[in-house]
Amino acid sequence: MEFRTSVILPKNGLHITHNDNLLLMGSCFAGNIGELLLENKFNCDVNPFGILYNPLSLSTALREMISGTLYNREHLFFYGGQYHSYMHHGSFSAASPEEALELMNVRLEKAHRQLPKLNMLILTLGTAWVYTLIETGKVVANCHKLPARNFTRRRLSVEEIVEDYTNLLADLKQLNPTLKVIMTVSPIRHLKDGLHENQLSKSTLLLAIARLQELFSETILYFPSYEIVVDELRDYRFYGDDMVHPSSIAIQYLWECFSEVFFSADTQQVIKEWKHISKALKHKPFREDSEEYKRFLGQIVLNIERLKEKYPNLDVQKELNLCHTRLK
Image 1: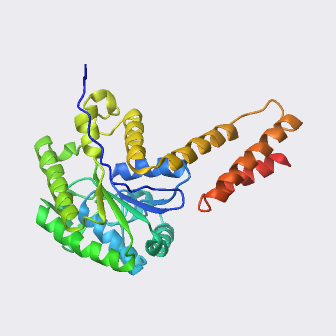
Image 2: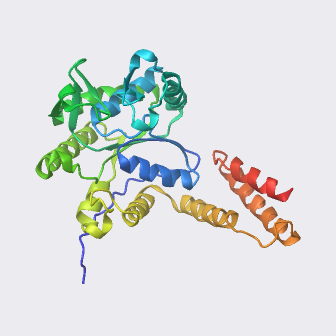
Image 3: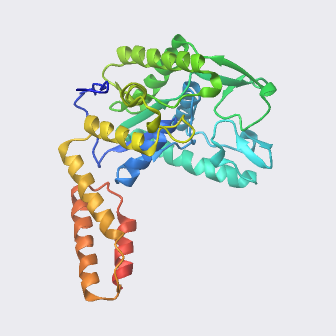
């Protein structure tokens, strides 16, 4: 007897490998999957602006990365003892403008350099509700807890999102003609918007992505993270203590679904081998100066070098340095 509704995962023939260059941007799903990709030694950049929730802020960030925009003092404002940017998450805020700009521009420069080399762009849309700063008339990515009177709030239309992303994708394809884009909708519910308003918001995002898939059928793929959590897991035991964010078990299940869709058998094998190496590196010997432990470390080095030879983009230098330090 089946006690759940299973989401049918898309079969698109697209495989992500450890030799690919990836960029993940958007809501928390991008961060969660990005962390697991990094943990499993994929070559990726995750949220160079920090978490971004709405489609317009996400597209603005990508346009700034395309143009190579660098931030200066005029992009910042001071509030609550720190300097902030309306385009950046609070993790980029700092007590001095110099520190904040350093945090922002280092990530921006890296992302700008990588864009032409990307194989895959993974975008997670969180909400269709946006906040516009009254003073400038511009949509902000983060309000940084400023008073609500400083902003107006509205819900984007499907047509507005589609038009914006049609232009954005044309620019991206001109810069990087072979780029593939995976789009998904965050399963996190924005309860502050209200349950009904949250549903309207998610529906707007889903309809916009569906339309964009029709327009860019060779470029855009959809991954059903929203449906997996809301329709397949569909239980509060798969949410965190706040009853809003997916639990660690739910995130792991999403990762397994993502792996099934986008990883070939060879890539799955690399992940398996790396997990074995990673586990071995955490081993704590009784005596670090013993010959037995040195032989153990020597075998780890050989295993790492074999993987590195097969997948040149695999960033394993930190682990190799750790082994060599212990071998001294």
